[in-house]
Amino acid sequence: MQKFTVHKGLVAPMDRENVDTDAIIPKQFLKSIKKTGFGVNAFDEWRYLDQPGQPGVPESARKPNPDFVLNQPRYKGSSVLLARANFGCGSSREHAPWALDQYGFRAILAPSFADIFFNNCFKNGLLPIVLPAATIDLLFNEVAAFPGYELTIDLERQVIVRPQGEEIPFDVIAFRRYCLLNGFDDIGLTLRHADKIKAFEAERLAQKPWLSHRLVQG
Image 1: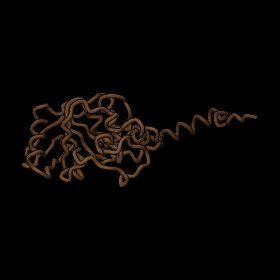
Image 2 (image 1 turned 60 degrees about the vertical axis):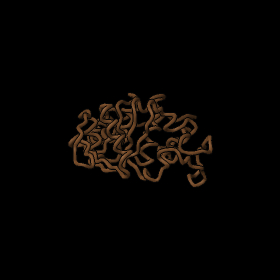
Image 3 (image 1 turned 120 degrees about the horizontal axis):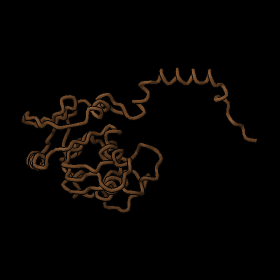
Image 4 (image 1 turned 135 degrees about the vertical axis):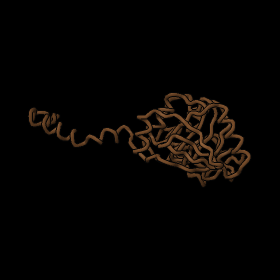
């Protein structure tokens, strides 16, 4: 999993409440058993006019919706998503943070998130930050007023730095912060103890060698 330490990026505003995971990555794209290739279909039903979108169709063959915020030239290359309340509600599909991450987002700022989506973000290297509604309103206003608006997110210090240099503090659970700073997903956390696991397996097989035998079916 990619580490998150300090990130500076262009901010894109998604001024909608209750954005659900089916909007983030529609259900027809869940057929894939791979963890890659979902970025092109992030927000598919809003992002393209040729609907319904189908897996495997390249972006060059699609018809973009010019009114959708992420298709506007001023937000091209954005990596910080500014959102409204209850972002990521709906089904618990882990494909939603996959799609956002693979689109290019590293962080999402919102007044609140759906619980399962919130947890899935941390497990996939995406930083969801909860801020007061008044602070989110302020950021929406600044993004609208200043093209090219960027924020710097410093996870180690737990602050968001506005272009003027003013800092906005945010909270994050210490364990989640540790995992993101070091790039540890659940597998990465386990592999920190790879030597101990190997030693345990070797000792167990020495004591119970029959465990290494496989049942051969006739």
